Length: 137
Length: 145
Image (cartoon, rainbow over all chains, first blue to last red; front, side):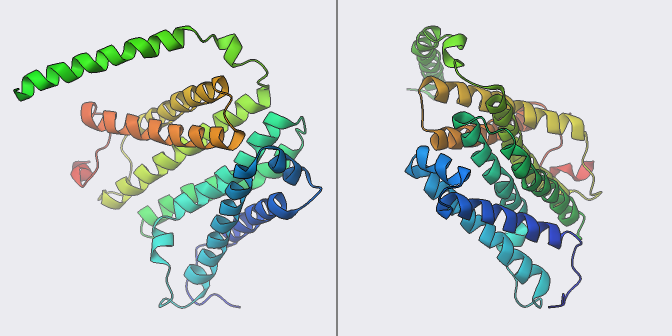
């Protein structure tokens, strides 16, 4: 698939962050035997719904990349594009919420390293997005 | 009842409401609240409230850049520090409150995120109201910058 309109260079970053966070959420919901799943089961039913909501947010992120960056201009998710910084910040806060629950219940400090990349990436992308849109790019 | 009189009565009620809140706060100690909290948890709460405050900050920056003619932010340091201080303070208070009440982890998380965002927005509204000369304003009023 080739891009049909001039894309900002950070589309790949957005896609990567959305997929990474989506995988974290799905592993936490359905990956039996994993640390994420165990911690989420221990922390109560509310965790399952939070992670499911995070999976939906990451799906919106993936759809945003394909519709707003790859499809022709007549296909446009205007609302998502307009409030993309909220979407990206939600993608940053999602893995951090998992890290928070892990920190409260276990001592597996090394797990934070695997969660750091999407958190930092999504925050930087949100800032870049706001500045790019503010300057009319 | 005139409007002035009503305003005075409401102010007195607000002051009176502080007294029971202070009495409850007086029974709680910091050691008791933070007992069993690890350093990684504290760091994550700090980052969490920073990200939540940054969300409010980005929303404001987005609004400012859209309305600004020059496409620049006046006094960005003051602008950012006010938001972040508000979010850190509110996030810290929310964390302590939830720890004291032994709230569910996910509920605690939601309260911290919401409180940090609300703290940043509160500081934003206060600065718009009282520090309009030093901080950028919204709704098209910043065209003069």
